[in-house]
Image (cartoon, rainbow, N blue to C red):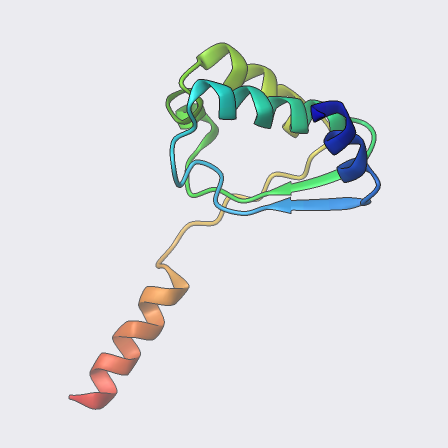
Length: 101
């Protein structure tokens, strides 16, 4: 079943996964996510977004070894963008609060 689902997802040239690490992964979920990343490695594009640096992915996935192997595959052919600054959503909230007071 997993192989079938991964094969189905591989049909898409780009897969976007938003907010990696927002909720910690249990061991089964971490293994499934690793399988997803591995199945796309050198076959199809993958965009991941996260508010966490790679150094904290071991905590998110509960296993530094899985996290390291996943990061290795993710960054091998990647352009990594690291954005710093005030949250765009919070900035909009401050503007709204300022203009209504």
